[in-house]
Image (cartoon, rainbow, N blue to C red):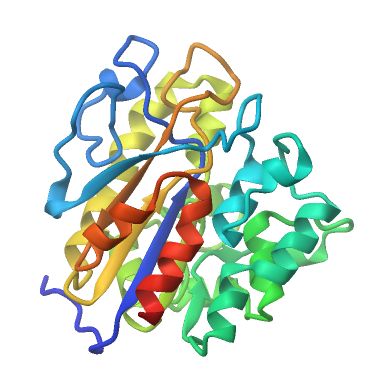
Length: 301
Protein backbone atom coordinates (compact mmCIF):
# COMPACT_ATOMS: atom_id res chain seq x y z
CA UNK A 1 0.00 0.00 0.00
CA UNK A 2 1.27 3.49 -0.84
CA UNK A 3 1.91 5.99 1.90
CA UNK A 4 -1.01 8.25 2.72
CA UNK A 5 -0.78 11.76 1.33
CA UNK A 6 -0.57 14.56 3.89
CA UNK A 7 -0.97 18.30 3.53
CA UNK A 8 2.32 20.19 3.60
CA UNK A 9 1.94 21.07 7.29
CA UNK A 10 3.86 19.93 10.31
CA UNK A 11 1.85 17.45 12.35
CA UNK A 12 2.37 15.22 15.37
CA UNK A 13 1.02 11.76 16.05
CA UNK A 14 1.39 11.03 19.76
CA UNK A 15 1.01 7.39 20.81
CA UNK A 16 0.71 6.83 24.55
CA UNK A 17 1.30 3.28 25.80
CA UNK A 18 0.57 2.77 29.49
CA UNK A 19 3.01 0.79 31.63
CA UNK A 20 5.92 0.42 29.21
CA UNK A 21 9.39 0.67 30.78
CA UNK A 22 13.01 -0.05 29.94
CA UNK A 23 13.83 -3.19 31.92
CA UNK A 24 16.64 -5.59 32.57
CA UNK A 25 17.13 -8.42 30.10
CA UNK A 26 15.87 -11.25 32.34
CA UNK A 27 13.39 -14.12 32.48
CA UNK A 28 10.93 -11.75 34.15
CA UNK A 29 10.92 -9.43 31.15
CA UNK A 30 8.59 -10.65 28.37
CA UNK A 31 10.51 -8.57 25.82
CA UNK A 32 13.56 -10.78 26.49
CA UNK A 33 11.56 -13.92 25.75
CA UNK A 34 9.20 -12.91 22.95
CA UNK A 35 10.24 -12.26 19.35
CA UNK A 36 8.98 -9.54 17.00
CA UNK A 37 8.45 -6.81 19.59
CA UNK A 38 10.44 -4.03 17.93
CA UNK A 39 10.29 -1.06 18.45
CA UNK A 40 8.90 -1.62 21.97
CA UNK A 41 11.69 -3.79 23.37
CA UNK A 42 14.43 -1.84 25.18
CA UNK A 43 16.84 -3.05 27.82
CA UNK A 44 18.90 -1.28 30.47
CA UNK A 45 22.44 -0.66 29.26
CA UNK A 46 21.75 -1.81 25.69
CA UNK A 47 21.41 0.24 22.54
CA UNK A 48 18.40 -0.67 20.42
CA UNK A 49 18.03 -0.47 16.66
CA UNK A 50 14.80 1.41 15.96
CA UNK A 51 12.91 0.59 12.73
CA UNK A 52 12.33 3.40 10.22
CA UNK A 53 15.20 5.47 11.59
CA UNK A 54 13.62 6.22 14.95
CA UNK A 55 15.41 7.53 18.03
CA UNK A 56 14.81 6.21 21.56
CA UNK A 57 15.34 8.55 24.49
CA UNK A 58 15.27 7.06 28.04
CA UNK A 59 12.81 9.28 29.88
CA UNK A 60 12.48 9.82 33.64
CA UNK A 61 8.96 9.17 35.05
CA UNK A 62 10.03 9.50 38.71
CA UNK A 63 10.19 13.31 38.49
CA UNK A 64 12.22 13.90 41.67
CA UNK A 65 9.50 12.37 43.87
CA UNK A 66 10.03 9.25 45.99
CA UNK A 67 7.95 6.17 45.35
CA UNK A 68 6.74 4.32 42.29
CA UNK A 69 5.43 6.46 39.41
CA UNK A 70 1.67 6.19 38.96
CA UNK A 71 -0.84 6.71 36.19
CA UNK A 72 -2.87 9.74 37.29
CA UNK A 73 0.09 11.96 38.12
CA UNK A 74 2.29 10.67 35.30
CA UNK A 75 -0.35 11.14 32.64
CA UNK A 76 -1.22 14.58 33.98
CA UNK A 77 2.44 15.51 33.69
CA UNK A 78 2.65 14.21 30.13
CA UNK A 79 -0.50 16.05 29.04
CA UNK A 80 0.32 19.40 30.67
CA UNK A 81 4.10 19.71 30.86
CA UNK A 82 3.83 20.37 34.62
CA UNK A 83 5.40 18.12 37.27
CA UNK A 84 2.21 16.82 38.87
CA UNK A 85 3.86 14.49 41.45
CA UNK A 86 6.05 17.34 42.67
CA UNK A 87 2.99 19.58 42.97
CA UNK A 88 1.11 16.91 44.95
CA UNK A 89 4.14 15.79 46.94
CA UNK A 90 3.54 12.18 45.90
CA UNK A 91 2.67 9.98 42.93
CA UNK A 92 -1.09 9.55 42.42
CA UNK A 93 -2.47 6.27 41.11
CA UNK A 94 -5.68 5.60 39.21
CA UNK A 95 -7.71 8.61 38.15
CA UNK A 96 -6.82 12.29 38.68
CA UNK A 97 -8.05 13.89 41.89
CA UNK A 98 -9.46 17.42 41.97
CA UNK A 99 -6.02 19.04 42.12
CA UNK A 100 -4.91 17.17 39.01
CA UNK A 101 -8.22 17.78 37.22
CA UNK A 102 -7.81 21.51 37.87
CA UNK A 103 -4.24 21.34 36.56
CA UNK A 104 -5.41 19.66 33.36
CA UNK A 105 -8.37 22.01 32.89
CA UNK A 106 -5.98 24.96 32.79
CA UNK A 107 -2.99 23.37 30.99
CA UNK A 108 -4.22 20.51 28.79
CA UNK A 109 -2.11 20.03 25.69
CA UNK A 110 -5.29 20.31 23.62
CA UNK A 111 -6.09 23.63 25.31
CA UNK A 112 -2.55 24.93 24.80
CA UNK A 113 -2.74 24.02 21.10
CA UNK A 114 -6.13 25.70 20.81
CA UNK A 115 -4.72 28.89 22.33
CA UNK A 116 -1.89 28.72 19.78
CA UNK A 117 -4.52 28.62 16.98
CA UNK A 118 -3.78 24.99 16.16
CA UNK A 119 -7.29 23.58 16.13
CA UNK A 120 -7.11 20.48 13.91
CA UNK A 121 -6.60 18.19 16.90
CA UNK A 122 -8.15 14.89 17.94
CA UNK A 123 -8.15 12.22 20.61
CA UNK A 124 -8.49 9.18 18.35
CA UNK A 125 -9.89 6.77 20.95
CA UNK A 126 -13.54 5.72 20.70
CA UNK A 127 -15.74 5.74 23.81
CA UNK A 128 -18.62 3.34 24.44
CA UNK A 129 -22.15 4.59 25.32
CA UNK A 130 -21.73 3.14 28.82
CA UNK A 131 -18.95 5.59 29.59
CA UNK A 132 -21.29 8.56 29.21
CA UNK A 133 -24.08 6.85 31.16
CA UNK A 134 -22.00 5.91 34.19
CA UNK A 135 -22.55 7.72 37.51
CA UNK A 136 -20.14 8.67 38.89
CA UNK A 137 -18.11 8.88 35.70
CA UNK A 138 -14.43 8.21 36.42
CA UNK A 139 -12.34 10.41 34.14
CA UNK A 140 -8.83 9.59 33.01
CA UNK A 141 -6.27 12.31 32.45
CA UNK A 142 -6.85 12.07 28.69
CA UNK A 143 -10.61 12.47 29.12
CA UNK A 144 -10.03 15.56 31.27
CA UNK A 145 -7.60 16.91 28.67
CA UNK A 146 -10.18 16.56 25.88
CA UNK A 147 -12.87 18.22 27.98
CA UNK A 148 -10.57 21.12 28.87
CA UNK A 149 -10.39 22.15 25.21
CA UNK A 150 -14.07 21.35 24.56
CA UNK A 151 -13.17 18.81 21.89
CA UNK A 152 -15.69 16.26 20.67
CA UNK A 153 -15.33 12.71 21.90
CA UNK A 154 -15.07 9.97 19.29
CA UNK A 155 -17.77 7.31 19.74
CA UNK A 156 -18.65 3.92 18.29
CA UNK A 157 -20.20 5.34 15.08
CA UNK A 158 -16.83 7.06 14.48
CA UNK A 159 -15.09 3.73 15.00
CA UNK A 160 -17.42 2.01 12.54
CA UNK A 161 -16.74 4.81 10.06
CA UNK A 162 -12.97 4.43 10.31
CA UNK A 163 -12.56 7.70 12.20
CA UNK A 164 -11.59 6.29 15.61
CA UNK A 165 -9.97 3.28 17.26
CA UNK A 166 -10.80 1.53 20.51
CA UNK A 167 -8.02 1.29 23.10
CA UNK A 168 -7.92 -2.37 22.09
CA UNK A 169 -7.18 -1.55 18.45
CA UNK A 170 -8.34 -5.02 17.30
CA UNK A 171 -11.86 -4.50 18.76
CA UNK A 172 -11.67 -7.97 20.34
CA UNK A 173 -12.60 -6.53 23.73
CA UNK A 174 -15.56 -4.64 22.25
CA UNK A 175 -16.83 -7.80 20.56
CA UNK A 176 -16.40 -9.79 23.78
CA UNK A 177 -18.53 -7.18 25.55
CA UNK A 178 -21.35 -7.64 23.06
CA UNK A 179 -20.79 -4.71 20.70
CA UNK A 180 -21.08 -5.17 16.96
CA UNK A 181 -17.71 -4.18 15.55
CA UNK A 182 -15.29 -5.57 12.97
CA UNK A 183 -12.30 -7.54 14.21
CA UNK A 184 -9.25 -5.62 13.01
CA UNK A 185 -5.81 -6.92 12.24
CA UNK A 186 -2.88 -4.83 13.45
CA UNK A 187 -2.34 -3.70 9.85
CA UNK A 188 -5.96 -2.57 9.41
CA UNK A 189 -5.89 -0.66 12.71
CA UNK A 190 -2.66 1.03 11.59
CA UNK A 191 -4.32 2.17 8.37
CA UNK A 192 -7.09 3.78 10.38
CA UNK A 193 -4.76 5.55 12.83
CA UNK A 194 -2.53 6.82 10.01
CA UNK A 195 -5.64 8.03 8.20
CA UNK A 196 -6.82 9.94 11.27
CA UNK A 197 -3.38 11.51 11.69
CA UNK A 198 -3.41 12.54 8.03
CA UNK A 199 -6.35 14.85 8.68
CA UNK A 200 -5.17 16.48 11.91
CA UNK A 201 -2.27 18.59 13.12
CA UNK A 202 -2.18 16.75 16.45
CA UNK A 203 -3.47 13.23 17.05
CA UNK A 204 -3.35 11.42 20.40
CA UNK A 205 -3.96 7.68 20.67
CA UNK A 206 -3.95 5.87 24.04
CA UNK A 207 -3.37 2.17 24.70
CA UNK A 208 -3.37 0.65 28.19
CA UNK A 209 -3.64 -3.13 27.84
CA UNK A 210 0.11 -3.27 28.50
CA UNK A 211 -0.41 -1.91 32.01
CA UNK A 212 -3.24 -4.38 32.64
CA UNK A 213 -0.98 -7.27 31.59
CA UNK A 214 1.73 -6.04 33.96
CA UNK A 215 -0.62 -5.83 36.94
CA UNK A 216 -1.93 -9.33 36.25
CA UNK A 217 1.58 -10.68 35.63
CA UNK A 218 0.06 -12.42 32.64
CA UNK A 219 2.93 -13.74 30.53
CA UNK A 220 0.60 -15.79 28.32
CA UNK A 221 -1.30 -12.68 27.29
CA UNK A 222 1.94 -10.72 26.87
CA UNK A 223 3.15 -13.41 24.48
CA UNK A 224 0.11 -12.82 22.27
CA UNK A 225 -0.34 -9.09 22.71
CA UNK A 226 3.15 -7.59 22.49
CA UNK A 227 3.97 -8.81 18.95
CA UNK A 228 0.54 -7.62 17.84
CA UNK A 229 1.05 -4.20 19.41
CA UNK A 230 4.53 -3.94 17.94
CA UNK A 231 3.17 -4.77 14.47
CA UNK A 232 0.50 -2.11 14.89
CA UNK A 233 3.17 0.48 15.70
CA UNK A 234 5.44 -0.58 12.84
CA UNK A 235 2.62 -0.54 10.30
CA UNK A 236 1.49 2.87 11.50
CA UNK A 237 4.99 4.31 11.11
CA UNK A 238 5.22 2.72 7.67
CA UNK A 239 2.06 4.56 6.53
CA UNK A 240 2.79 7.97 8.03
CA UNK A 241 4.54 10.59 5.88
CA UNK A 242 7.58 11.11 8.07
CA UNK A 243 8.69 14.13 6.04
CA UNK A 244 5.82 16.15 7.51
CA UNK A 245 4.73 14.19 10.56
CA UNK A 246 6.61 13.58 13.79
CA UNK A 247 5.55 10.46 15.66
CA UNK A 248 6.22 10.38 19.40
CA UNK A 249 5.59 7.27 21.51
CA UNK A 250 6.01 7.31 25.28
CA UNK A 251 4.66 5.94 28.57
CA UNK A 252 3.82 7.14 32.07
CA UNK A 253 5.72 4.47 34.02
CA UNK A 254 7.17 1.01 33.73
CA UNK A 255 5.25 -2.20 34.46
CA UNK A 256 5.05 -4.85 31.75
CA UNK A 257 8.85 -5.11 31.47
CA UNK A 258 9.03 -6.88 34.86
CA UNK A 259 6.34 -9.49 35.42
CA UNK A 260 7.91 -10.69 38.68
CA UNK A 261 5.88 -8.02 40.49
CA UNK A 262 2.37 -6.59 40.13
CA UNK A 263 3.50 -3.06 40.87
CA UNK A 264 4.83 -0.34 38.63
CA UNK A 265 8.60 -0.19 38.33
CA UNK A 266 11.11 2.59 38.95
CA UNK A 267 12.52 2.19 35.45
CA UNK A 268 12.87 4.91 32.84
CA UNK A 269 10.33 4.76 30.05
CA UNK A 270 11.22 4.82 26.35
CA UNK A 271 10.28 7.88 24.34
CA UNK A 272 10.62 6.86 20.70
CA UNK A 273 10.55 9.50 17.99
CA UNK A 274 10.28 9.27 14.21
CA UNK A 275 10.09 11.88 11.47
CA UNK A 276 11.69 15.09 10.31
CA UNK A 277 11.70 16.64 13.81
CA UNK A 278 13.09 13.58 15.60
CA UNK A 279 16.46 15.15 16.43
CA UNK A 280 14.84 18.39 17.59
CA UNK A 281 12.52 16.42 19.89
CA UNK A 282 15.18 14.00 21.15
CA UNK A 283 17.39 16.87 22.29
CA UNK A 284 14.59 18.31 24.43
CA UNK A 285 13.05 15.30 26.13
CA UNK A 286 14.60 14.21 29.41
CA UNK A 287 11.58 13.55 31.63
CA UNK A 288 7.78 13.49 31.31
CA UNK A 289 7.47 17.27 31.75
CA UNK A 290 9.18 17.71 28.37
CA UNK A 291 6.59 15.94 26.20
CA UNK A 292 3.92 18.65 25.88
CA UNK A 293 6.38 21.58 25.45
CA UNK A 294 8.24 19.66 22.75
CA UNK A 295 5.05 18.91 20.82
CA UNK A 296 4.00 22.55 21.05
CA UNK A 297 7.41 23.70 19.80
CA UNK A 298 7.28 21.31 16.85
CA UNK A 299 3.86 22.57 15.79
CA UNK A 300 4.46 26.28 16.34
CA UNK A 301 8.06 26.92 15.34
